Image (tube, rainbow, N blue to C red; front, side):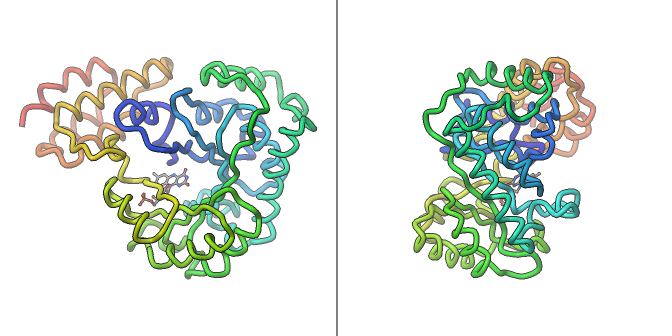
Length: 331
Ligand SMILES: Cc1cc2nc3c(=O)[nH]c(=O)nc-3n(C[C@H](O)[C@H](O)[C@H](O)COP(=O)(O)O)c2cc1C
């Protein structure tokens, strides 16, 4: 999730309750294939965060070809194409969920990325053939070192798509078979339309109907939307006959989501500290600000959340967070 599941948060998750599979935040295919150095922070992962799927979005087939090669080189276990993001900043450019009404382009993007994977693994093309500047190649090497990954051509990453039911209405009975015709390794469906954004509730009956289509094509299928606990995830996998589910918002401020643990306040505060420590170690030159939104999330449900929030929005350092401990634990 953009702005949430960065390498730091995933490290907190992997320490507290690791999921079966990790996804990066979505990253602009155009951006990384142009060598946008800062975007490579979003592709950082630790070697214990596996299997790891790198998610890309965009609308330019050539960029998808190049991005697939870059992600193969970086050692991702999977590459996922985002056809589900409803944010205006993404859809107004024709990317994310807007692709649902542009099947020809969507097809082109899928085929370009699949070709990138194939060309990389058949040694037809290598990272140095992409015309990237030295600064971009250097940052790619930094990522490799960080992930402790030595580029090798052992097994290609999976290639998958994550999408929604439709734009204004549910067209999944037409859209899903179209996607399935592209020989995907798996497909994820969030049970809402673009128009719905995050409102209403996910339509799990539509997810089930789509899963039947996926089964007929032998394509593993994941459902997504509104899952709030591990036991609900397990129940839904059974009830809707799925290969798995993805959990998004319920993980925010809640790295226990992939376990049955109900955290105590001291455990929550320890997780905040861990989060801040990993952040400082990973990005020592970054300001503390982006952490505040995570801390606000960790505070949700706290009996004195309102008072704490007023302090959290002003936090600027690990030391200031430590100073908050007594306040946080004293209810
Ligand atoms: C802040 C935020 C950022 C998100 N970023 C992404 C993203 O980068 N890629 C993606 O596939 N979905 C993204 N999503 C959507 C979620 O992955 C998920 O599909 C959606 O929230 C429904 O599932 P949930 O009810 O489990 O959260 C984002 C959602 C939120 C709230």
